[in-house]
View 1 (cartoon, rainbow, N blue to C red):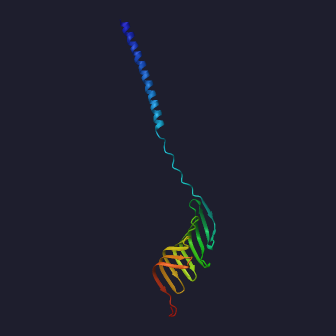
View 2 (tube, rainbow, N blue to C red; view 1 turned 90 degrees about the vertical axis):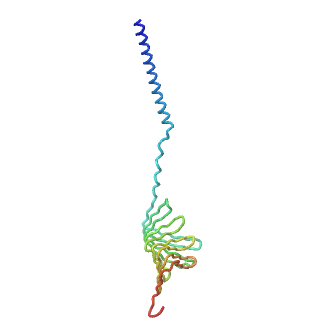
View 3 (cartoon, one colour; view 1 turned 180 degrees about the vertical axis):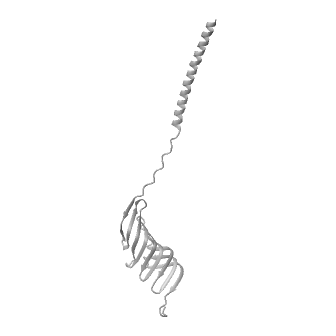
Length: 199
């Protein structure tokens, strides 16, 4: 009787050990399957942000540009130094000398320290002690823009116009190159220079 009980107890123990082994195999398989499914359905890390496009620059020791249309020359530019920014369609220029031509080829001369030429729109932005000479009138300001569609030079800053017998200061200057007309929208002060009692 004792031999049968011990034999039955041994079978039960082997049965439980076998069942425990299958349970471990099942758990391991379930963990492996769960990890695989988690890996499959979890989105990967986002792609790295695109690197900013490197600025393509071309440096020039000097630059000479002339704009000509069916009516003739519009302007001629020379600069001591220039840097072409291909990605922006711009040329940065320094130590600038410009000639603007009116309809009868009357010339307005301009000098500036720095500027920007937009190669698509053909407009110019000039800064830094800008000086224009138109006949016997000298114009000084801090900034001038050339607008090709309007054929005009504009300056929103304070402007000083000086002629042989007159000095005018104001703001918002417009020089219409087509009509050969100068407009100072905000007049501030006019000074007359007298010569021995003559105006």
